[in-house]
Amino acid sequence: MTHPVRDDQRRETIARFFAAIQAGDLAVLQEVLTPDAVTRWPQSGERITGAISCIRVYEVYPGGPPQFAVHRISGCGDAWVAELVADYPDGRWYTASIVEFDGPRIARMTDYFGPSFPAPEWRAGLVDPDAGTTHLS
Image 1 (cartoon, rainbow, N blue to C red):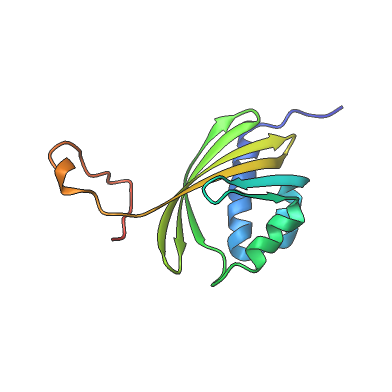
Image 2: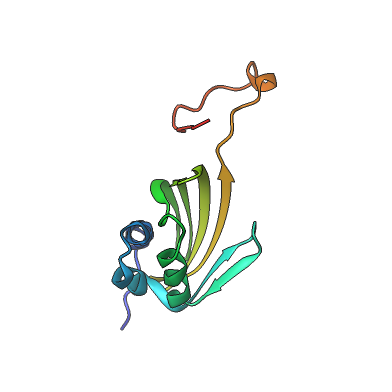
């Protein structure tokens, strides 16, 4: 009899995934990804198929993988979203990862990236600063 996967377990799996990328912990990456996991990067039109291929991309990342700060993980069941700030050698990027599970393991991720940029002056009287966002200009 299989036991249902609890939401807190999936939240922890996502956090472990991003920590393992930074640490280069291949064993954890293989543990949390399904063997045929797919990662999609729509902005560059790329698709990474298979856990081992995903691991290889991060192994050869120029300057090493980004340093992630996970700001929020939300979802339930098989569908989750992780909001992160990723610091790369060339700057800070804001990332949203849509994470889909197959049982207790990550089967599919779709990542969206956006660079940090200064707020335009024309909006100054219309918006409030977001104290929860760290910004590098």
